[in-house]
Length: 77
Length: 77
Length: 167
Length: 167
Image 1 (cartoon, rainbow over the protein chains, first blue to last red):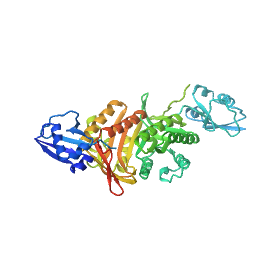
Image 2: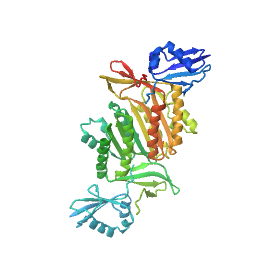
Image 3: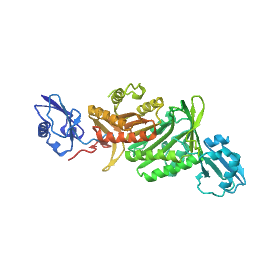
């Protein structure tokens, strides 16, 4: 299985990418620990996580093809 | 002495004029009684009176050249 | 009333000059056209200190009253008093909302057809909240304070005064 | 994102079609131009059941931050989620304000220079009060709910993220 991870705002700047594929992750917390390994700086930032356009507050199971976004506080308008 | 009386909105329609001169009136209440004689229908309508652009609530003395307006409730916008 | 020019496009020397200029252009014969609105909006780009603009547009509705459809409204105004009261409204808004940079009002006099605009209010501020709140308050003060009257004209050319003031 | 056309000018078949059409045109590359705004405003005259339109324009301010002047803002958006959230916002507003006839939102993506418009919100209603209140609420929901980020770009080409989200 594989999920697509999107980084926005300042997080895209510190990860130097907008999007990265991760395989073999069974939950959001599992994915997050892999991302922390790749981009340890992320730990210093505030963000929310969405799975398939829905902001999550728990730790859902991930399935193949899910889109997971790491989003700093919004500042549109 | 002479004052100019302005009628607006529905009051201009029932008096059939926008403006009329009145002489020898010493106060707003005196003027109003003359206007009631000329246009008895006015008594059926709600209005406010201004003297020189200021809405009045008392009975001021009038002087030569004053502009007195009879104004139905506003409905701009 | 005179031909339209946009107050914001002129250099605003001081508050009193600005209000004087605004009031000269405030009453327009007939509808507030898209051309007039576009002039005001295009002047905004020069205001690099403003983060939000709030606009209100009042439009003539084709209301149906007792089976008859409104085709137009004829506005009449006590013009001298309108400008005097509008100056007070602008001073009130600027005093109450410290972040507001400008308040513009354009109001129709005469015939405005259904679907046309009769009132344009534009408030610019440093930040959105005061732009929105000040525009809302300006519209309420216009309705309450400006000596303007509207006569609804129906498709059969009969008419009816809005709020005729029958005692 | 695609080339702009105005949703109100199309026949609104039903609510879902209307929202779908609105969302297709919601994100524009670069500033919300006067041409786009004029298209939306010129469509209003066909809405003879609307008595009031409330508009909000968000503009890029030439703020001075630590001695440096902002020359532009670069907006980025999570586009799929923006349109999903905007649909919820519009449904929320229409459900809460029964007199509202339409809600339109246009938001920039990419570079918007100081003095240019980055957000356009237009709410039409039968009467002024709901037009104004619903527009105000729509703007607040946009700020709160839409996944959009802004990066301030200064005259020396350095940049700074607004609300960078430092923990």
